[in-house]
Length: 152
Length: 138
Image (cartoon, rainbow over all chains, first blue to last red):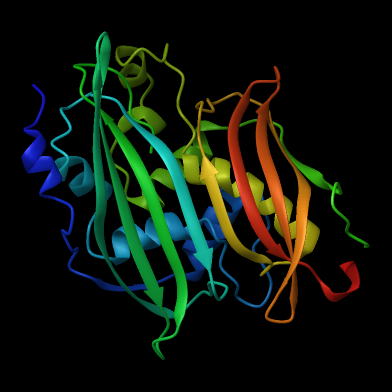
């Protein structure tokens, strides 16, 4: 079942609760290793943390993003892009403050192709002094078909 | 290191994408969706039982290449697209090339085209990055 387009469009402007995130040494070690890299020097955190720090730190979750988009269980979700602007390097054991929300929605429909709903999410990370550390934007596609795969 | 437009960035190779790493990342990300850790689920979803590598990890390979080339805090911006998934067992190689140089706030910024190719030549990830070069590179 395809969600009502107006209800999906109404999510634009939705703000996440906001919150804080502290990258622990253990998770930096493990995530760095998972990318095939040694931990960076001087307690620098691997930039790949920006994905989950943005989502979990802003007070939402991958599950909630799928739920907000009314993605049916088993329906495919794919990634269009990530756009990360980095003003300062991430560091372990630093507390970051996050804010953000849903900033765009587009529904694409054409004959013979499944309906595609695309959402843009944007999250800002600031350091303890309020200086911008990074802005994370990403767009996910929610395919309105009954079965497929999810690739986060 | 002297960098000019057309400079090829030394590649980063992941010889084998493994399920163990995907499971670790799923836990760190708090990602409950099974395509990264449950072969039965991916079989039912049409992926023939192969697990899908998390896209931030595919991006991580590109990042590792840039860091090895220009230093641990070199990335100013990276925009990445993911036209095709990477599966467990794949061998992938990140590559890149400098397409422009500019100055910004006292830094030399290299604009780079990046890609992540599978062992059979399929291009799984494309990206554009803006990288601050070390002083001896410009």
